[in-house]
Length: 222
Image (cartoon, rainbow, N blue to C red; front, side, top):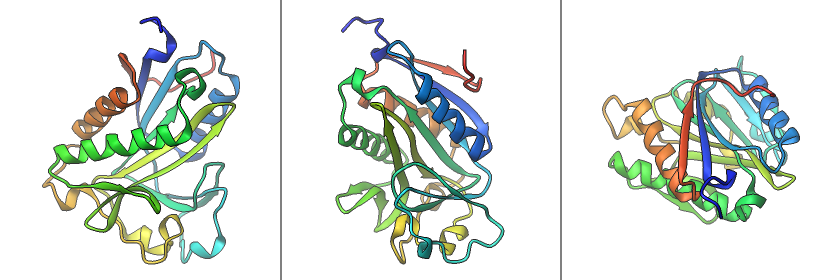
């Protein structure tokens, strides 16, 4: 594969705090209009408080949402929570071009999270029976993906320094009593930007990219 192939290049967009619905629609649009030469991107961001309910989501897993909005979305999985202090990463990749399957993608994401957390002194691992990454029996990172026309969108959420209380208002990912964890419990004043940079490093390596670029500009159609 040529060194300048789109399959070898990844663009990371660091977008700050952005609205959930408009970001989701941008992911859909990029996925719908991309061609064989469209570059792969990973968007890092945070969201204002929001519950998102996946395609398999069951209403009974939303216990007491209060004033936090619930958005029905087109990713896999059940209900989860996004809020400030959580690092969200959306992976907009052409899996056919990379000759990757869905399981390969999930494994690469989980491994990247495990390696990033290890650098913070946190011993974490995936579980065969429940997607995501766990430490001391609690979930510290969640996964939810959609693959359409051989291309992925949606992605991961890593709890860093956030209010975990809203997770008590749902059965996270459909698991009653699922306990959540975050980096702040193990690291005094975690460096959000540094963790984001290390996760970008591991995602780039584990997904087989040889060239990484960074931008703070949101994606827009050309």
